[in-house]
Length: 313
Image 1 (cartoon, rainbow, N blue to C red):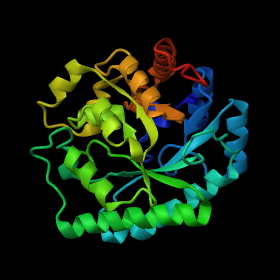
Image 2: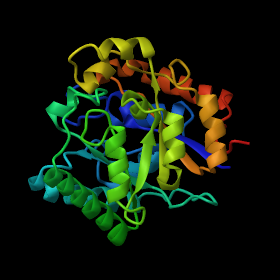
Image 3: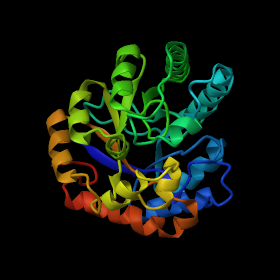
């Protein structure tokens, strides 16, 4: 089984491109390479330049290739569709101009992927992790969101050959177990796959191992995070936005938290997952001075747990 470890700019606090404290993108690429990763995601739209030559040169200097781009935006509002499609065009065009990611035997789709995440709703942001009190979309709004996902995924695949993968995310309208089940029913595998994130599954009250097993037939891509249980218990008792909880350290380096990664390695081997696993640790960018140490620690931990770079054997 071929498993490769990649990382993402969110480990440096890069989630909102309007945040004035974001570290320079070249620093993120440099430190990702220094930590031993050979793959990285683009991060949110607008963080890395859309100039393929400039980005490609920086990737090459740091021994990296891009494994995914991300749409991290409001998938519900009907007026947002033109922006979503503009982002899809721009991200996919950049992905296809960058050096290709080698495809592993048995890997379902060639990388890079387009990770699709719903975001931008105060009423759900403050309810992250609280399924019982989080408002749900009505039928019309849900159908609009599904239509937007289908439009993004169809455009990415038909015009660029880029596979879209949907990422349930804490604080968005696609977070909890009932929403994941409904999403899988409404979006066929032929249209888009799943990117399941161990940290976000746990945050939403789901068991990561059980959920990966349940949706193995739809699983195209994996994100690994870990949760500090003490911080998690505290922030769930506060009225707090999801990224405010991240700023307080609810996400921690892999191996320090509650998620059982040796058990997940056994499960992933059983399921026959091939390709990339992206290591993430969302944080406040004002704490990015600790990012290099943390992403290196996470990678070293996964190596000790049997996720050796290039293979699980």
